[in-house]
Length: 275
Image (cartoon, rainbow, N blue to C red; front, side):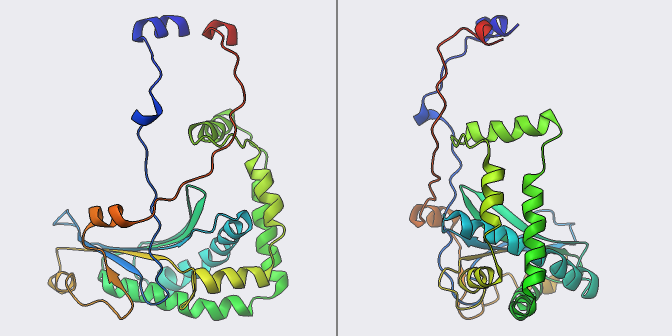
């Protein structure tokens, strides 16, 4: 069957230069405020919702630094949801997590609301982040260790479905990493984390004044509310920068290049020889 498909479609190798690539850009340093800000109108004029997505990007490729971002995401997930969704009831969609792009992880916070505009939502997200710095410091070493242990256990879990294993291994092949035991390597490094190290990463990457703080705030304004629309052109707080031209940003920004692995040798055989 494989040979028949190959003959019918006449597959040829796509040269590297012609392969499509998705570039990941380094967010500018922003020690204060909301960092770099993108503002857009909700394209659906009947949609009642405004939204904000806040991303804290950590560009240090050191694996321990990157695992600290995952641990921090685990610690902050429930408090963020409880404060903005349960207590403040800002919207139905309130979520946080960690996003991996080109070996670089970001803490991402999302709020969608039909009762508050994007500027108000942004203020509440950053107010929470400022307040959480104290909460993080007040957590005991035992509590931090418990979060870390849970993350380690998650990474050590065996894959029980062939489809999941296929997706995991295929991702390694597509990205040219070939690190098929990545989860176990990450688990081992995660075990080395402690409260002191997490507080250091938080102070450098997330907290106001951090030396490695890179923040991107995306605001979407509903067109159904005049008050919301009036804030699309409102001034930004001190320390924030408006990104008006995405193309210009891409031309001047640094592209993040992920490290490649070593592909295992594959003998030159016919498809039939592999089966």
